[in-house]
Length: 345
Picture 1 (cartoon, helix red, strand yellow):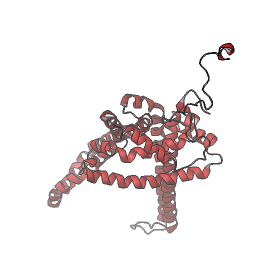
Picture 2 (spheres, one colour; picture 1 turned 135 degrees about the vertical axis):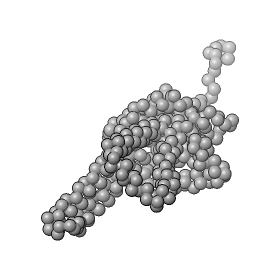
Picture 3 (cartoon, helix red, strand yellow; picture 1 turned 120 degrees about the vertical axis):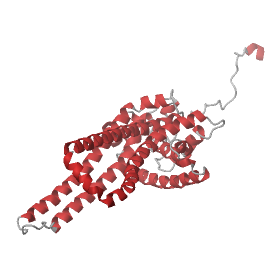
């Protein structure tokens, strides 16, 4: 599986059993090599920080702003509402019904388009950060090019997973509606029909199952499939097939441990993030600057994923590995010139 002419095709674990703990040492080594080397390369820090910014801060900033706008407007309107302004609003609404719904629809389309673009950038940013960790540089154009296939595939699969979860909620709503409709014929005129217990229980079970299954799929997808998509430079389906056929047979519990150990690492990373925020006097919360400062806490998580797959060698190697030591002559040093028997005698 390895190419002796290419040190990146060899695995440092060849001949060793596969482990979920050993890649931690590889991730720390990569952290020291890329971020904590001397002299420190600020260009690498700011480049990797921008890639991390695409994965976290950018979407978060827009979502926070969108949720804060109503919170800022509503308190200002409360005095006007108490003075009977709601009657004026209802009169205006009835006179401008088409205009109101047109503006509302356009606003929803604009907000939805913005969130869709941000979700796409976040998907590309996740792959870009994986590339930055693997290569050890902050070359943004190079990382953007490397994220084209796996990043676009990640975006589409996230939409698919979210849509399936929303369909579960839609089915739950239909079940409630059917329950109400079944009682409508026996409800006295002028009263609202009761919601039967069976529809409430069934819709609740559907919602819980949708959330649980969606959460499990998201965890497996993010922690197992996404790094494999970058390593193999392919879409989600091809990455799943590669894992299923090349790695998973006989190693099911290894991958279960891989997922669980990443949760433990994320717990440790959370403490490191809090320490960086406190040590930086809050600068770790500033968009982009915070992404740069918190790199030492998040970088090892991604390097660990790449290090785990690197154990399998061949096409699964992305991190640089040390070339094998040169073989030295262990016997007597051979002569550099032929020996004339007559002279030596």
